[in-house]
Amino acid sequence: MSSLRARRMARNHRRMQRPARLNLVALMDIFTILVLFLMVNNGDVEVLQADRNITLPESISEQRPEESLTIKVSPDVILVQGQAIGTVADAMSAEEVLLSALQAELQHHASRAGPLAEEEASRGRSVIIMGDQTMPYALLQRIMSTCAAEDYRDISLAVSSVAEPALAADSTAVAET
Image (cartoon, rainbow, N blue to C red; front, side, top):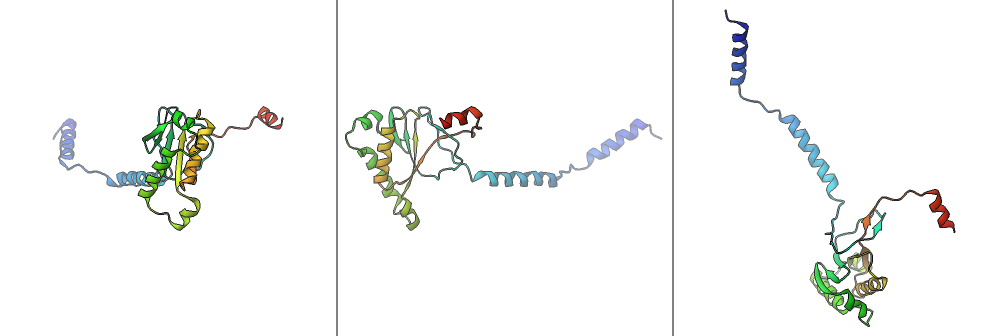
């Protein structure tokens, strides 16, 4: 007869000799949920590369822009798709309303993109203007006029999204005066 300790050790040795088993059902469930989560949440986010020189204005709009040509306006320089086309000072001092450097760059991108489809022709090519919140309105107007002249009429302005502020009693009073 063997002691309790000897029987326990024998039982543990037999158990250790069996091959290890992995329960794949639980693992498959976790991966299925993870894949579904990623598929559902993948399509509604477009990330514009932030520029440290540009401080975007804030908005409560939830509508996301489509991917399109991006014009960045920092306090010093104007960039189209990351390529500098001129300075803000030159654009503001120009006598013409349309910015010739921007016009040439937009024509170049339009020629590379090819002709518009019928439904796109009515609203024009799309462009996102990402301007610093301190950008003068006159510059924004010139950029938008140049875009419209080159058939980039579907214009979106990039903003930082913030939560919608709750209306307070005194904010309603201010609105009435």
